[in-house]
Image (tube, rainbow, N blue to C red; front, side, top):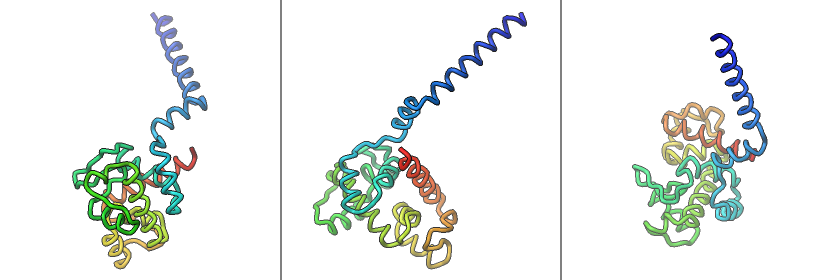
Length: 185
């Protein structure tokens, strides 16, 4: 009986070792990472990231967090598309870049990524800081401006962990984590 149990344990350990070796294989890791961190809509992301001087990896991280690359995503607050744009914000940004927008067009990947990337570039230029810009993308510039004015967070993003909205605090951390991962790909 003990001998049979020892054999079963050895087989189990051997299987675990084989699985670990396979997972640590570069190709398997790459396949897993590419499935978890895809770079879908690469034409649009690369085009608008270059046009608006934003790191394309940041845009991929935002899209992953916002919609997980679902072009038809609509939030409970009615944010739409890959980059989860609120309609009024999308209209304002669309006006600055000279494109027409409507409720249907906001879901089109090219339009959504164009407007979302432009919006992120505006926020990065306003705050001169990616962390603070991401907080504004999620919580709104008005909230972020108030947090900075009231000393809740610093304008340089050095204490971004003090963001008072849990959703926004977690959002910024998630985007930054995914951004670092995309940069390594």
